[in-house]
Image (cartoon, rainbow, N blue to C red; front, side, top):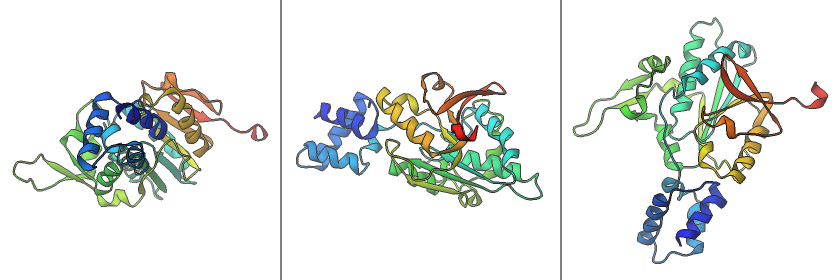
Length: 264
């Protein structure tokens, strides 16, 4: 059964799951079912129940600040048209809220605010539920030298402390009005297909080589012509797709969807 779970993780989620996580998931299935068989395993993956055990959900606010510096430098280009952004494999939503914090701060200097919308998805329903709640602990506020870290002081409110529990922070409700959180499997095509920028960071490394090609195709298809795909700093070397060209701007490496030949 362990091998079947490992194979299912590659087939349905496109990942090479950690053996310890597979073992924990197997024990969970044994405890919650009279027996564990191929059909029960398949059902757990199709319902995304397995995602709570087998996916990695490491995230925090303004991680890898060079990408937020890049976003800030690009915002003037969208003051007239507005901007559509996707946070793919969004985990508990820190990235999406960070993007919203940056844009809201940028808008304070404008007579007419830049219109924006953020779609943020993850395969793990529990992570999306946390993102929709917008409640975080100190772990999501770690200090890593990010020059944007100070923005959280303006958009996160410390909640009344509960005895024996870690301090918690609530995101400013106005951030949520421009963010749509939903569950989605990166192995499937994205439901929306006109993003100016897609953030897909620090998740690519967990996928198998075969599934990486499929995922890059799905993400590329969802970008507007000339749209930007941002991967994690350590992931860009392993990402290649015929529809994407490599770009370096202000020492930041990212990908841009190439224009069709008739538009050149």
